[in-house]
Length: 261
Image (tube, rainbow, N blue to C red; front, side, top):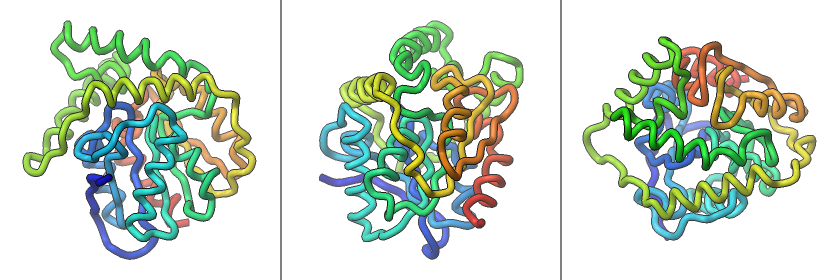
């Protein structure tokens, strides 16, 4: 079992491990967010089992994915990390902080929701629908899934997709359709689970989203922030699932302040 990963920023302090979204590989992270946080922190992005250049098969449950992430973190010899989980990565992060609480210092949960959260079981249907829309309009599917269809949202989406192409060397492998299908099954199951007891999570948690998230409805971000004992919430206006990418400057500033506290 080998994991593909990248490290950025200073090699001191508590590292920030990034956990990726559905169909996300190393090159799916907005460089403004990764580089912005890496300006002050040791940032580690990686492909979980069966994703991109990592070997193994992609799990069909969020819990299995969490085990894979913990295996990776421990393999690096790390005893404590901060975690930034976006979308599916935020679901994985919620499991890790409950199964291995001593491993996590702080959590950033963006564009995500709790187990059994409202509308999460619809991600498969939305993903298929927007894939068709993207093929018909010759646009990147993330334009539809991550951003609003307002003028500001469309512009932000185009800029985001452009930034994802900035890296021209050492690009990651794309994801297989089997891995994508397994991830969709895992998210669907997460959406059908009974709610977890989030009151046991004592770590400080920053919850972030756009105010019009179609993939993981924004209501879930409010729910998370309310149920977490040390949760704080930031919601960006006229923004969707990728609100942290649309408002990357503000998000990085807020995340750095949160991590420094």
